[in-house]
Length: 198
Image (cartoon, rainbow, N blue to C red; front, side, top):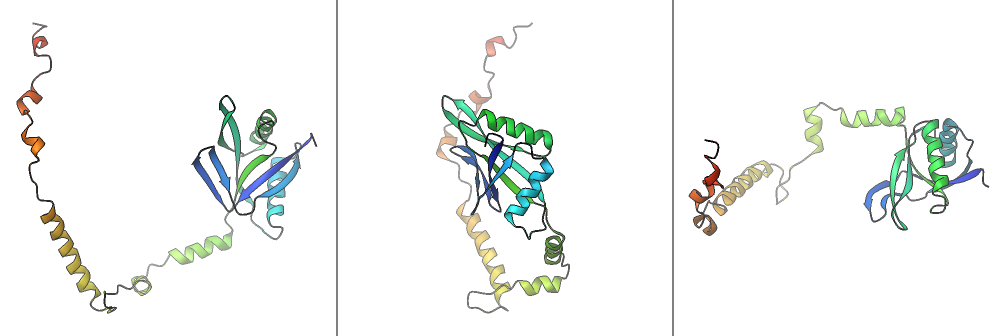
């Protein structure tokens, strides 16, 4: 088993950045995969895709490695590093070997390329230029449920709120402002040195 390593793969989850232990990966069902150290970067992406869903045609687009850093004593904080090619993958293996006493597996967070079907669905959802279609998706309804009176109610409410805010916050000179000595505030701090150069 010395020539193999276990990966804990997180996907369709979250990356929590500021936890007590630093960066943390979270997902519903992390996947455990055992790989050899001799695997290539492209083979690694292929193995992960197949293990997550053999029917899935999506490819891995991003791999993030979570690794420990000793801060002081035995206290450890976790940071992340992108794995983008053979060199960064070998660096990940080296970092794991050094920190093997602290972690018995490598933690990776995976993101997938967006499929053409997903991109088309998003474009259809957000590309409508029709004002009528926009208006038909959103209705303003008054407090009594009447749609026709809703615009009048909103205009009246905005005016009332604006007037209430203005009347509520009329400028009054605060007591501490009356106690300020403005001349002393604008006087040079070291007046005895102002003509020292002449």
